[in-house]
Length: 170
Image 1 (cartoon, helix red, strand yellow):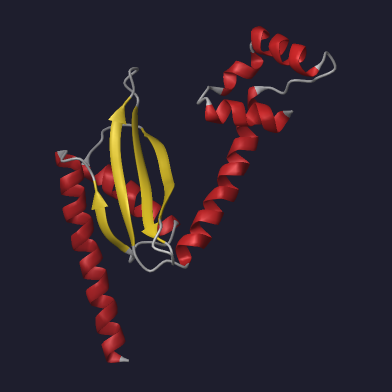
Image 2 (cartoon, helix red, strand yellow):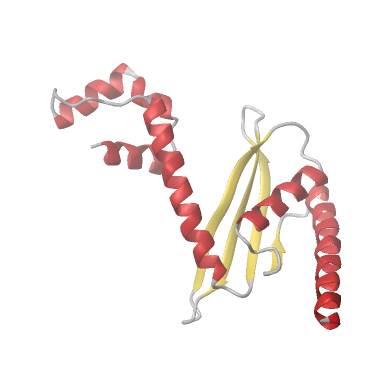
């Protein structure tokens, strides 16, 4: 039953605080029986974090086999003025079918500057080992994303040039 509740929370995009509400506990006990022990939000938070680690590793292992990827990135604010950034990755498999995955959705604390965006994107690319594989990134035309892309591209070109020089010397 815990897996069903976990999937319900994730698919419905509900806060884990719902599992502690009296209404939720009563409802699930009516469905599954009075002997059901409904775990609290900390239990489900840990379970989802564990699932995230497993899925991230699976995606990273899959991306290791891919030569070129494209990414999309966006930043937004919630109605409660919390800022977030998300990035997805896209590639074609051996049958030319487009495959997509979510690299991250993270909350941004503080200002959403080009430097913050650039560092987050660079960390994502390093975490998933796709730094040298990104052939294109699609974003909106927000000035912070544009500046971040320019600075990130300069850095990537410089790294590739240094790497090529080292290869040429060998």
